[in-house]
Length: 72
Image 1: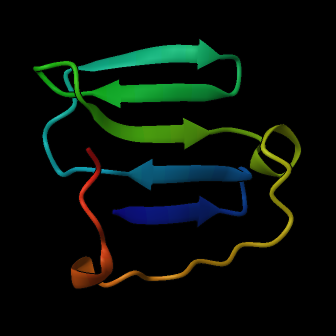
Image 2: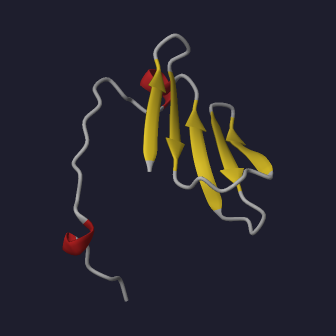
Image 3: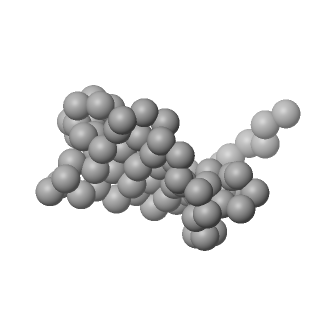
């Protein structure tokens, strides 16, 4: 997963997959979802991120794959 922040437009781009985007869906006026050919989520775009998602600071924690537990 890649997360990019564009300060000039206050936009966050969360890329979940490198599959080609075949459809973009507007979730609301500040959020779009990019989907692949099977309808799976490829990326999320958040416009006006500081206001619409209350993002003032950004931090992340990397979790190693061997620490993840299967769900179900």
